Image (cartoon, rainbow, N blue to C red):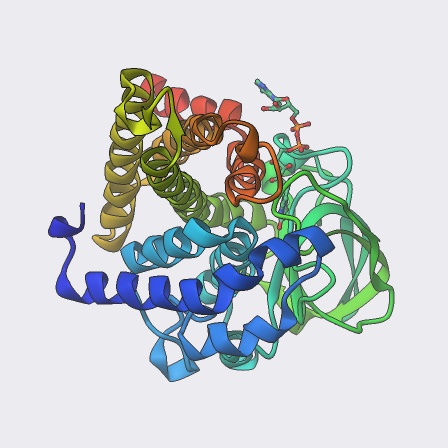
Length: 380
Ligand SMILES: Cc1cc2nc3c(=O)[nH]c(=O)nc-3n(C[C@H](O)[C@H](O)[C@H](O)COP(=O)(O)OP(=O)(O)OC[C@H]3O[C@@H](n4cnc5c(N)ncnc54)[C@H](O)[C@@H]3O)c2cc1C
């Protein structure tokens, strides 16, 4: 679909692809097996602009548009889902919350360090007892003079132990329905009472950092509040809209990566005296996957394009994420099937892509939640 992209977008895709092939592909399998976050990659990501994709130049960012953001995440995912998740969540959640709703002082403090990779961003909404029903959170922030005291536990937080700061959502008013009584705060690493209490072992995206976070009497000044008191949930919904574009792009990249491997393997592997690519059963799998991934690309790029035009794009982002994540999971599954028994071993990347892509049907709203968002808009 590159023929539709501007020269600038095509150049961006080529440079991120070249970087990932050179710096990531040789190591992604080992990072995954060791469940190790690749700290050594962070300065290189920053140099390429991948840690400040949408951050304006005045704060040291690359000032790119949302379509560029989708392309960057897609190209990372082609090679490594964990890296794509790191780039998507750093840019699209924690950093984005400060960029979209922070004040000047907060932007000056956090955004340059985020863009340089000195501080990775975490974003803490989900809790042990509330995920899809995110407003049902139990974490509280209670005002005490000129500061706030935060107590609670957050679950599945990306960059939770390697991040330099964390944007956390907490209940600040229990007298109103939950959606109307939640506020965002930024908490710096090392703040007393703020700890990464548990590293979570995962099925996929294993070299992305996912932890449980504990807030035990964490005191932050009011200057660490992001946005208006009790408005945090509405801001959060806007953050998730854009975030969904990147999770859709992550799925697309994983699907494209697995499919490219399947095409190469099918041309090489022989059975019954010919390359398996010559069997119609294999060709149909390839054709279906390519068609679905191209359709996913159109949906995701449409949402990014609407976002860049300043037009409403929430349901379109949900459609892109829903379709791309389910299509890419099918594509990765068929790509593994085409690899036969070898696909089921750790020798080929395709099993890692299949494990990684499943996250895209869960993170930043499950497929069921995306269908709720789409239908709600239709029935409004
Ligand atoms: C690797 C990883 C990284 C993550 N990173 C972050 C992060 O950085 N920050 C963060 O805040 N969160 C993060 N999450 C959390 C993620 O967003 C949640 O896991 C997700 O929103 C689902 O919530 P849950 O796990 O509590 O599932 P639940 O909400 O308990 O859902 C369980 C099942 O019930 C279904 N369900 C729930 N409600 C309905 C309904 N009304 N109708 C139909 N079906 C329903 C769901 O679709 C799902 O299938 C991450 C998760 C993972 C796995």
